[in-house]
Length: 238
Ligand code: APR
Ligand code: ZN
Image (tube, rainbow, N blue to C red):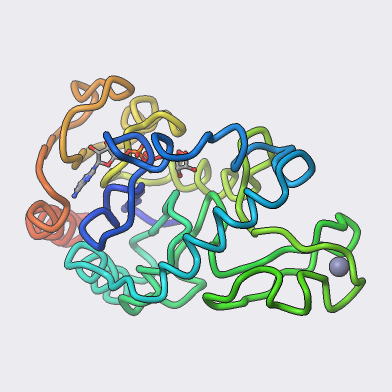
């Protein structure tokens, strides 16, 4: 397992023009999370849920990775086995920055994918930036059931968390970039590692930064060189 774990959230994509969730003016200010991102959203609010993800998916086409994505991608491509890149983000900016799909773990799903709602089928299709109903009329190519965004809604299982927990057990350097810690308990995770770095734009009520060896309250693009140097010197020593 990897010695270094880089866990990111919406903050790493903020400078690429993708809204975060809980900053002022974030997505959850604009949309009711219980309507568009809840386990029963597709049953109770199908149209507004499809529209919400169609809008975010089509906006993604013009979004470019920023310097932070690029540096993380360079590090991962240089130290494939030693570094794990895990993100809560559903955007494809790490992939656009040069990471292979197999080299980044998306904990909460992936915006350019649709998934069959029939659990026995569970087929996943990459639709790029298309609207859901423009892909085979929103129907599964395998069993013709309705499709849905391949996003983990609140209250649903998030299978990739097992991968995250495995990496947490093994990592010696834990790096957090751009997450408020409201969903993932980064405080606890930081205690497993020999060393830990927290980079956020500002402090978060959900994170006790005393648990981190180093804290950088600045934009990810301004922090990422210092973080990269720390990762590279850590790997040279370990
Ligand atoms: N550079 C670094 N950090 C930034 C930047 C930036 N340019 N801009 C914002 N941030 C930080 C904020 O300080 C905040 O701590 O990013 C964090 C964004 O927090 P949230 O909006 O809560 O996003 P995130 O932590 O990724 O949310 C986790 O919640 O709603 C669910 O599934 C959704 O994956 C998401 C999860
Ligand atoms: Zn199907």
